[in-house]
Every structure is written in structure tokens, then in C-alpha cells.
Length: 165
Image 1 (tube, rainbow, N blue to C red):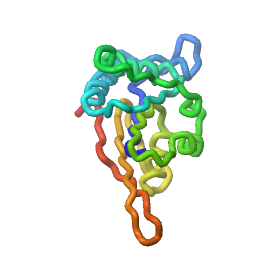
Image 2: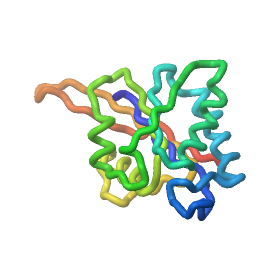
Image 3: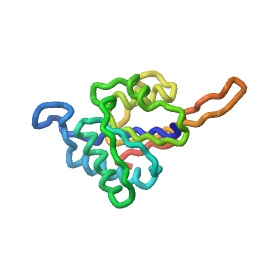
Image 4: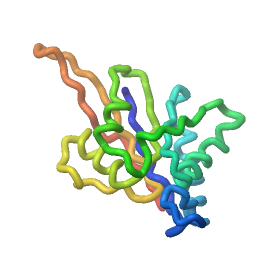
């Protein structure tokens, strides 16, 4: 992939009506933050972006802010995938999103600590070295550089955005 964009869900309620973690909705503040980040993403996301979301309600409500902006502009669909659930692993996420398509952009809407662990892994940092704040977007780019040994894929940080900025 050429671009991997990680969007942590915005602020969620501490409890759900059912007591189930995956059913916690966004707070009023979380909905405002999701809308701010959706506006920024809507301006800069490539049209061919594949959007993947955790099935947790707080992630679905976060990405819904982007879907609202895209109704007239494009038909970007959100794929809800279990490998981004609260109980997923970084190894599984990497397995599902890694590919050699240098034109692809993937937007993931998910959870901490997996997003931070994924970032650390891709950037060659120690596990636990990064924390993705609620509502924040981290945009990574990859490029392939050919060399005598066959080439190397480089991953670099392109942008970090937070709703409070």
C-alpha cells in the first residue's frame, strides 16, 4: 500500500446501555471531534481509499461523520471487519492490510493500543512507544526504493492530525 491512515475512534461513553464494551457510543464531544477530523479527511483522502472499521459502535459512529460528508461527493463504502475489533491483534491487522499495491490507500478506524502498536511496528519503534489519542489521525506513506539488493520498502510519517488542532 502507498498510504495507511489510522483513525482512532473519538471519545466514547464510559458505559453502554447493555454494559458491553463494543456497544459504547460516542459522547457529544466525541461526535464533534469525529466531525472535525472527517472534514480534514474528506479534503485530503484519495478517491480510491478503502475504508475499514472495527465493528464497535464508537468506531462506526466516528466513521459515520466521514460518510455523511461523502454522500454527494463519492460513494466511499465502509467495510466493517472483525480483524479490527477490540480483541484483535496487531499481527492479524498487519496480515490483513499488507500488500504490494503502491497505489492503494487504506483508512483504518480502530482502537488503542493496537493502533499505537501497529504504528510502532511499521516505523521500527519499540512496542508501546506510541499512543494514538482519541479522535486523532496518523497518516503513513510507504515507498519502494530499488537498489542492488533488490530494493527496500520505506515507511514514513506523512501527517498527524488531532481534533483540537
